[in-house]
Image (cartoon, rainbow, N blue to C red):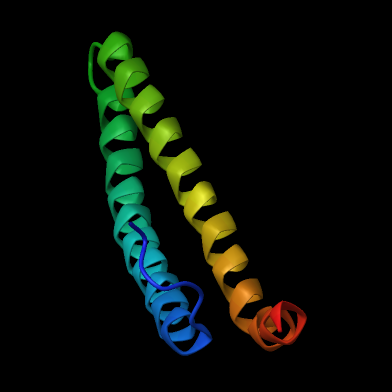
Length: 93
């Protein structure tokens, strides 16, 4: 079902691409977060302040921030696997 088995020569480039993809997604989400923070500040600065809408957007912002943190953890895990790949292949044989 899953193919032949473990292949270090295929895994290493896949992990490196995953790291790059996590970095790109993280950068995009960070840029969006900055924009959302500005929008929330404008909502609170408005007269009268739109606190309920700002609160809803803030909850979304917190979720996105947690997603970025998860991307960072996954990125570090992939980088660690790339570095330890030689050790893993030597342990396997």
